[in-house]
Length: 60
Image 1 (cartoon, rainbow, N blue to C red):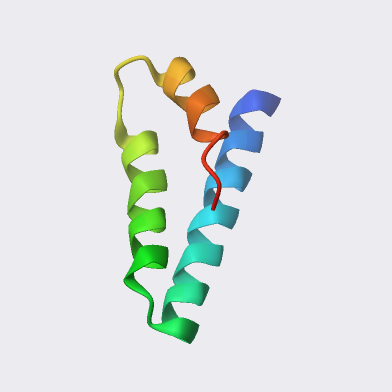
Image 2 (cartoon, rainbow, N blue to C red):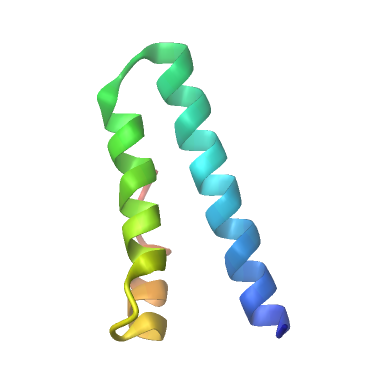
C-alpha cells in the first residue's frame, strides 16, 4: 500500500467518523448527507484521482 493510499484511508475514516458523531449528537440530517458524499466519492471508480482531489475541497 502506498503512503498516498494510506493517507486517503485515514482522511476518509476521519470524515465519516466526524460526520456520524455530529449526526448522532445534533440529529441534523446535513451531517449524515456529508458522510454519504464522502462514501460516494470513495466508491466512484471513474476518474478516482481527479474526484479525490476535488473532494478535499469540500468544506465539512
